[in-house]
Length: 154
View (cartoon, rainbow, N blue to C red):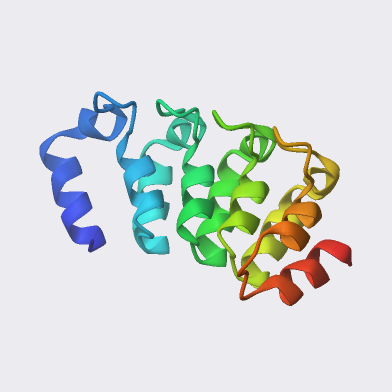
């Protein structure tokens, strides 16, 4: 979605940016999940920075959803910088954002951003007892496996 549409909606109903639906999703959750542009994410973060720390019904932050969707590195960086503590928050399935990123076969560039923002997350286990590198080694069909393992190992 074009940022001008988001800005028009915000101008018409300023409180809408803070309102959640029945599942706890605010506009930033939706934008993160649907791989919105950096321009859209930046506008939402600038307008409502607390949104980066908002949990939906699955205990997912926008950073979890961006990782799930395979967001671009610049979007991940914006979310990480706005709410760095989010990188240590586990969702309902006990996965950190970096765990979700590996499961979703994120680009090595995206994994690098998460690693740079939160190096300690590399040794943290998810609910299954797996670290990000364990996931990269176990999950079948990862096209970016070598790149992910290279980033996680360096």
